[in-house]
Image 1 (tube, helix red, strand yellow):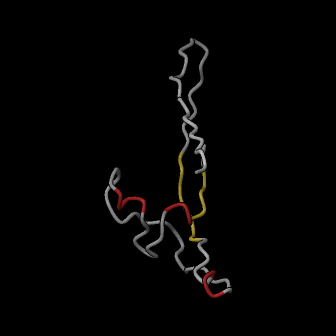
Image 2 (cartoon, one colour; image 1 turned 90 degrees about the vertical axis):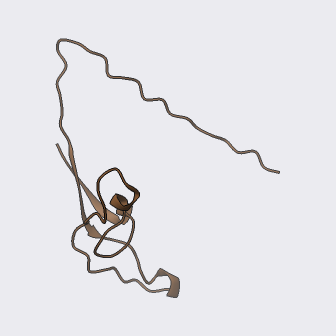
Image 3 (cartoon, one colour; image 1 turned 90 degrees about the horizontal axis):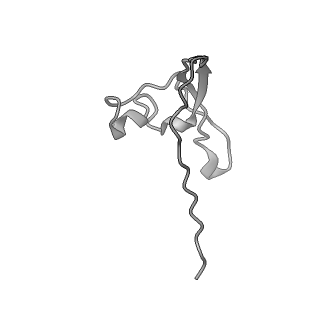
Length: 81
């Protein structure tokens, strides 16, 4: 039987200081990049241009695209600061 190694990351609260600056980041998910033909040895992507959540924010359906049905991580991530 193999041992499993579990890594736990702890996020520490930001330290408050008088000279701290606030950076607001916005994340948007663009076109789908999932290779739908990988099972047959080819390469074909879905025509989905932008991620559209299937459900309300905070639910499991919010992580599924309404247009192509794949998970949010298959869409190109765009970070705006």
